[in-house]
Length: 347
Ligand SMILES: [Zn+2]
Image 1: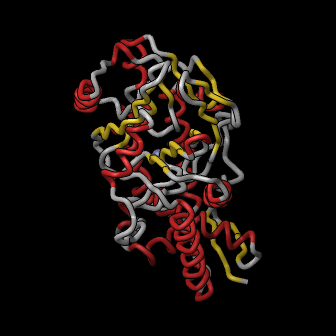
Image 2 (image 1 turned 90 degrees about the vertical axis):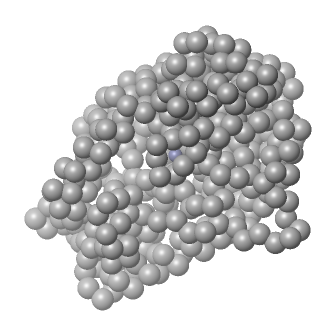
């Protein structure tokens, strides 16, 4: 699912140096443990007024404990936080937000369209699971695998927690702190709610999972934020959206990108170009498989990733469907449904 990230040459500054540059701007990375395969998630403490924390880590005692220690290492406590920013709807990023808001009284900022999702997280997650289940069955994943994955997903839900957004954000608006102005930019693709914060005067971006150095962000197919409870389609174009978002970021003047996982990025153009090439190559490979014989998206995923297509069925399915969407848009593949299962045929 992931490919190795940017190759480093000797002239490029290392992780420590880039974190030092962030620290000079008053931004401190706090790497918080998660129970997920992705490993630690980056929260960022911004020493400014209001005292700001971007993302929080998952809802677990271990994450809370480490967050408190990390804040203490910077002479800060949870009670002092004044503004929490939530970058997107994934539980490793917002799970602790409700506890932090309760203890500190901090404002909670997130994209306005994400607020209903966060307010009623349990119900939203349930609808997400239902949508994922329908999508998996429609694309050839066996019912017993779907049932097993649903149980896994339900067990993960405890790492999230509902939170009330008190400071809804709009795409393009400015979030003014005493010493800096952060422009809020909606960059959907990895999730429908991906939000990045751009400090134009310092050429710095807090990017969350929009751009990560060591892994290619998975454009997960997810229910649109404004979808009703009975939403069944059309299928959201996660990868198409993600590529459009990447291209917008590519055009920006940036010298420091602080991602939601892993180390800072100082050459976003090279990294984005690498990602765009990866997606091109993968689309070609998938086209090759479909050209041999019409296939379901799950069959394609099995061909590409073997058993991972079973254990991580929704992730791999999203990956395949994203690339098939690119091929559909190019008119190189057609989609047809029979007996409740979709197959793709090359033109
Ligand atoms: Zn994420």
